[in-house]
Each structure stands twice: as C-alpha cells, then as structure tokens.
Image (cartoon, rainbow, N blue to C red; front, side, top):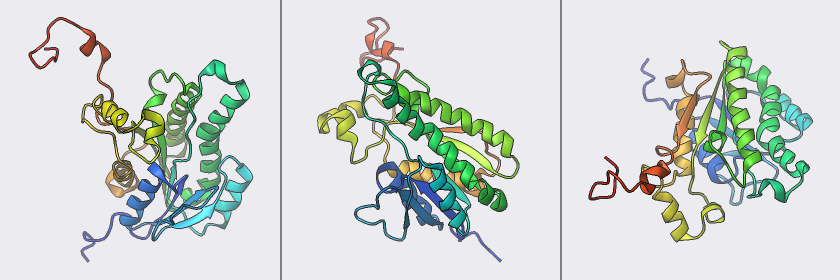
Length: 257
C-alpha cells in the first residue's frame, strides 16, 4: 500500500508546552497540519482557542503537576519543550531570586517535564524537541539568566540524547528573532522591527510558522538518524559588527570584499 500521501505525523500525539500563543502556537499548528493530535499546555487557555488543538492546564514549573499530567495522558510520541521566556532585566537591577526563577522556567522546568514524559516516550520510541535560543550562544545583556538557561538546555538535550538512545531522540531548535505579537516589546514599533530585520542575513525576522516547519522535520521520520543535534533557525544569524564598522576594503555597496 502506498503511504506516501499520508501526513508525516499521522497518528502521533504531540504535547507542546507554552503552546497557546506566539512561537508555541505556530509549532502546535504546524504539528496539527502534519497529522498529529496536538495538546498544548499552559497556565491559561489560548484566546481565541486554537482550532483542532486540545488545551490542558499545566504549570510546567511544578514537577508534581507535570507527572500527573503525563500519567493521565493515554499516549505521547512528541514532546516540544517551548514554555519559557524572560523580561528585560539587567543583572544588577534584580536580586538573585528573580534571576533564579528565569532559570527555573527555562531549564529546570523542561528537565522536570521531560522526565515526567520519559516512560511514554520510551514506549513509543518518541522524540523530544527543546526550543532553544541564540541567546544561549552569545552574550545576552538584559537577559543573562535566560541566555545561561538556554545554553544549559542545549547541553541537557545532548546528554539526554546519549543516555536515552536508541529509544528516544532528543534535539534542540536554536531559534533566533521571531516576529510574534510581542515583537514590539523587544524591538519597538514598526520602524524598530524593520531596523532589526535588516541585521538578519535573510532580511527578515522568523515567523512562528518557520519554527513550526523545523519542528515538524525534527519530529518526523525524515530526521530518524538525527539526535543530540542543534538545528539553527535564525536566518543566518547576526552580521559581524566589524563589517559595518571597518572603513577599509569597501565595495561601492558598502560591503567588505
């Protein structure tokens, strides 16, 4: 029988933490379009509801809640640890407890959630996708605790991939700047978003759908031999500052040769 027309994730169940808006909602929609039964979990339901996607309340920072959630779940094939984030906060402007809460949400919570899901994933030979950030591999003034947590998350994924192979695949999507409903908070109004977009080699910010498409790839059988990897979804990264600062070797268009 020819199965080539079947969606790549047909019959699989996926859980997306923090999947009610922004990048998480884009991931949830992409997984659903690829044929998966998708459950998004967060502290509050999405507004408006995501069509064709189930919602379940969960505070990912509570390991007991996470364990109860996965114990009650009938099946799990794909876990996407997307919940996270941080406000802009310089290190000396807050005490250690505030910074520790950022690390808890972005590193310790994905650890607890993945451990709670481990038994399901082992039974189904499933896979885990951590949503990392370019902040984990470069200085992140104003979000230093977040960057440190994301660096740790990528390392955690690599260690999980080795410990749990061959039963479970674990990978990281290293995401750059994304144009979501909260983009103005990070980059300013339309002029700020446009200016920031020009710093990206591909000339634009990512969309949630871009991240969703990469998630579907890593979750699918097309990535069956990929584990412990970090896939960069950042439009080429950041243009080196020295290229614009240098006054030598400029072409007529202002580029270094």
